[in-house]
Length: 214
Image (cartoon, rainbow, N blue to C red; front, side, top):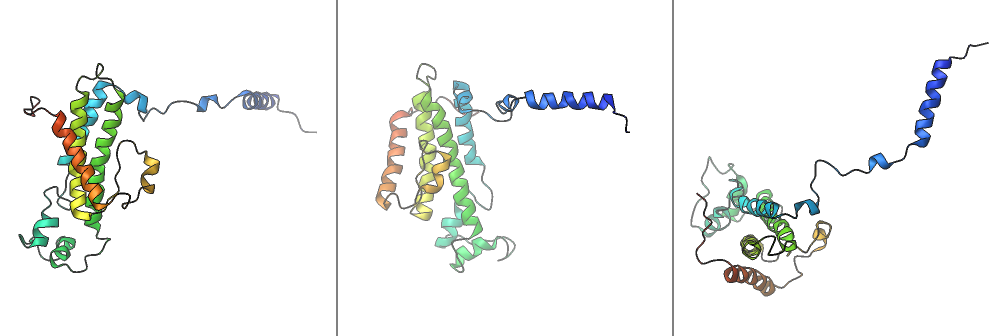
């Protein structure tokens, strides 16, 4: 007859009791590595998000430059691609020659992506700014105008490069992005929407900007 190990039996009983008595409440905790939308609703965060939208203007790369020389100058004959030969950034060479210029050109896709990153940053800033009152955030209208100007700038480039584009503003949630068609608006309607953005900026920005970058 085998002897019963009393110590092991007691530990097993206690462990079983914990398993039965425990709930899932310990799993219900706010993630520590993310910021909720409610936490963002402060004037300080609104300013930080506006700065992030501006910083996208300086986040270009020679494969997707903000100067637009590959998409206009070399395709119009104003400039040559140059570099270390035709294989050096071959995608731009094909654009210059109008040869093998397919819709899946990776550098065209990269430019599209980067422009929508800029639009996304302006939209996220506007979501926060729009929720704040003028008393909480005295610069509210001016920052709205700045973000809409930046958004219009990005859309203007997209429009000139691709003609038909999905229009995404701060009212669109991330889940709905994939549902928006680039033919939701006509060619003229898209131009009108971009013009409206610039007009709002013109109506609400000071003629002389006192907040200068030193």
